[in-house]
Image (cartoon, rainbow, N blue to C red; front, side, top):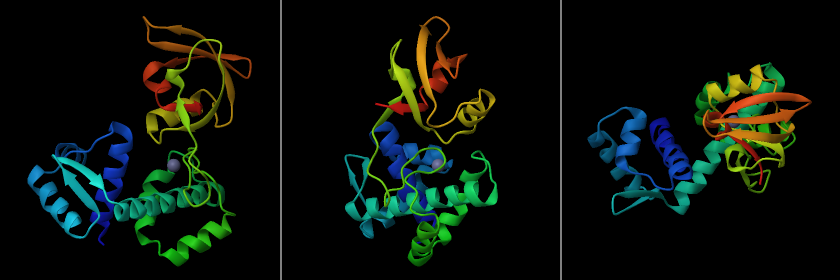
Length: 210
Ligand SMILES: [Zn+2]
C-alpha cells in the first residue's frame, strides 16, 4: 500500500463523515487532480478490496474502514506525542502527523500508544479508536440559548484553532449561550466570566457534549 493509496482511503472516510456520501468529483476537487486520475486509483482500490462503488458513490469496505481507522489512530497518537513531549502547538501538529502516520509500523504504533499511556483523544478532542469508545458530540451551533455546555472537541482547522487561542478557549471549558444573533450570524457565549462573540461559521466547528 502506497502513501497515496492510504491518503485516498483516509479522505474517503473523512468525506463520508462530513457529507454522508463520496463521489469521484469530491475527491478530484480535494486533491485538485483530474477525474480520470481519480478513476484510475479507485479502480485499483476496488480491485484490492478497500472500496466499493455503487451508483457513482464510493464506500469503504470493512477492510478499507479498518485501514482508515488505523491510519487515523496513528495520526492522532503522533499529534498527542508532539504536543505533550515535543512542545508543538495544536496548530502545528496536523502537518507533521500527516507524514508520520505513513511511516508507522504496527509495532511502533503499539509502543507509542503504551508510552503515551493510551490517550483517549488527540489534542483536538478527536478519539483514538483503540483507546476510547466513540464519543457523541454535536456542533455548538446546534444548541440553544441558556444551555450549559462543555467543549469536547474542535475541528482541526487553522481558523478555528486560532480563534480558540485568541479567545483563550480550551477543551473541557464550560460555557453558556446567552444570545444568538441571527442577523449578524453570531453566538454570544459566556465562559469563565467573559463574554465572547462566536461567528456561526466557527460555532459549527466547535463541538460540545450532546
Ligand atoms: Zn487531531
